[in-house]
Amino acid sequence: VITKVGSLSNEFRTFDMEVIAGRDDTNVTVVERKLKLRFDFREVYWNSRLSEERVRLLDQVAPDDVVCDLFAGVGAFALQCAEKGCTVHANDLNPAGAAAMRGNAALNHLEMSVTNLCARECVKMLCGLPALPARSTPTRVHAIMNLPELALDFLNAFREMVETRKSTLFSGSPVELVVHCHCFAREKDNPDAEIHPRLIAAMGCVPAGTRAREVRDVAPKKNMYCVEFSLALGCSAAGAAAEVQAQAMEGDAVKRQKMQ
Image (cartoon, rainbow, N blue to C red; front, side, top):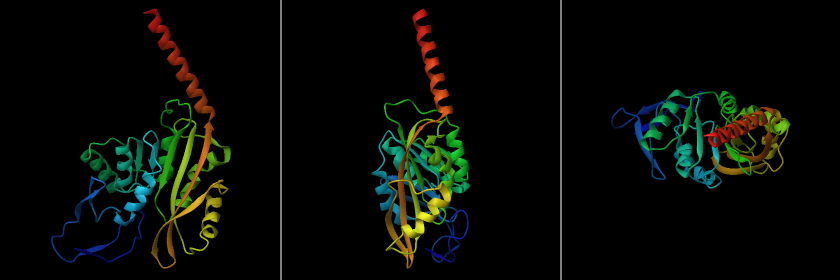
């Protein structure tokens, strides 16, 4: 049994705690949707109250989508997406969180990419990954941003793509970017009055179709929302060059097969 003796005040969202009964051991195993999650509660962020929100987000994800969880914690949502069949890139700034994700992926026999980066650096890393397989319609890429105090500010990582409507993700692959960005607002009657100025500061605009979906009340004058919008991002010059090169390589392979 533990008691919280501090608030979430550091970059890893952990807090000071005191063991008031039982062994002084904060290593735990949690089961959510039949997936096991093991972590040291003292070293990582965990909130079981967000389990319903994870279900709501999972319902918006299809098995052939790509999910990029930029503040993934111990991997609860990322693992559920991997189990659903998605290609998953999970990131957390906390080294203990990244280590827990790798362990939990192995524990549940699931595959996903795990990184330990600042979210902005993670987006840059995603831009440098190989092009996505060509499809008749652009791949849906979900950006999950559950860091309510600051996540809206991190949307500037996508500002160039918002302004140009050109994708730089995955070597410039054309994508439908679907953003799910959690935040806090004080006033329930008009949360957009607080949220929209921060969107404009980060991206230069409020994308068409943006909505702030209420998640839960955290405390008086502290309400949690999920800001959601989607953008059709075309193939960038780099992506077009990569596609031409891929087609050329495919053509060369066909020629070699015919010659053999």
